[in-house]
Amino acid sequence: MSNTSTSQYTPLYQQHRLAGAKMVDFAGWEMPINYGSQVKEHHQVRKDAGMFDVSHMVVVDFKGKDSKAFLQYLLANDVDKLKQKGKALYSCMLNEEAGIIDDLIVYYLSDNFYRMVINAATRENDLAWIKNKISAFEVQLQERDDLAMIAVQGPNAREKLLSTLDKTSAITVSALKPFFGVQLDNIFYARTGYTGEDGFEILVPKQEAVPLWKALLEVGIEPAGLGARDTLRLEAGMNLYGTDMDSSTSPLVSALKWTVALEPKQRNFLGRKALEAEIDAKPASKMVGLVLEEKGVLRSHQTVVTESGLGEITSGTFSPTLGVSIALARVPVDTNEHCFVEIRNKKMKARVVQPPFVRHGKSCL
Amino acid sequence: MSTNIPEDLAYTRSHEWIRDNKDGTVTVGITDHAQELLGDVVYVELPEDGSSLNAEDPAGVIESVKAASDFYSPLTGEVIAINEKLDDEPELINSEPYGDGWIMSLKLDNTDDLKQLLDANAYMNEIAE
Image (cartoon, rainbow over all chains, first blue to last red; front, side, top):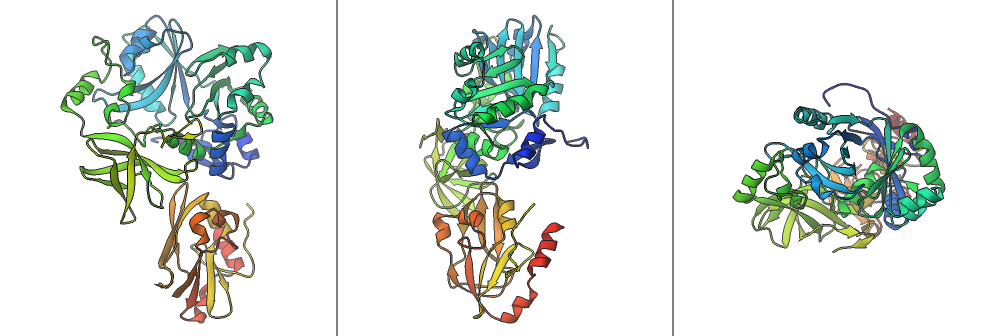
């Protein structure tokens, strides 16, 4: 952070303290890393239902007649794919060199109204970039700092959340398909998440965050911290911005080519030229999953030794669901199934796999 | 914060505890405070049984979900036992740091070395800083 500002607090800060959270700094925010045991919280989400305070994330609304045209220019994925109201799209926002400025979710709420959720750590940079590109378009950008965000995740999350709603709301929210969102009064419910489990991300006015948190607690949805969020997303094979990808890596070397819409060819989006040049030149590396076949724990920045050359782990952890260590790594593009990882000067055997590692509570290995 | 620091043990600044078995041997583990800082322990790399260690030598590695931390020999001696239970149940370090979560036993070269360790009070002051 360039400024020396003091920590920021979400509306749920006191609730975290009451629940015994260990707080840490995350991108300038005081956030719960765990409430006692990260592993227990991880299993709670895989087997039942947990909730995360993700109010540090940034919600930006785009309104105005050029909203769609602007987002088609700004994002590597194409918002024209969004035909049904409430539908969400995952996308990268690229710089002119096709490096990833951020990854985000954008919702199509109505004609001339899109909502975007971006990362907390990249906030200032993202907004500066967007504002710099927006001037030729008739679009109003609104930062929704009036909103808090709670992610409710797990096989029982849906059922438990629905039980807290009145009948009419419950019917509407229950009808939401995966990757759809709906605005009900002043609350936005989206069937999205970052854990590989079913669930919702809920945007709520700040002053209503505490009552909602308490209502969710009452139906047995347990708080889970950023620690569990990280092991859950890694098991689900989802990238973390700033760790697995950044402004120097393209979607092609970040296992995110599927999020780039190259068709239609005439859509001119930021980073397109560099991306096409990189495709023509064929990227030298790719992102894969690793499973350690010996005892130990894979960590970011460890060296991966393959027959085709060296690679590097971008995120690694012990997988509580699988009981082995797993990682995401960037390796030479023709890496085969076997490799070694250097852990404390020892070469440990690892297997190359296609993420996800875990989906809906079950091993994908 | 309430951390458990038994009166009858000795301690190091690097958060190991030492139980004097009064027969020239000691049992060693990491403190409640240390396991709390580490978070859920998922893997322990134990020293080799029979190896000779100098005081402050790295003796093994404790990996939690968060990070890997070295674990140091508090005294000079020979490793005469290691807690192999930790291979399958590394979480014993979290649940019973002073009991079934012990890490190794040492036969000391010189029992006078015990005098250099911290007592419970001194350790408590150390971690309060």
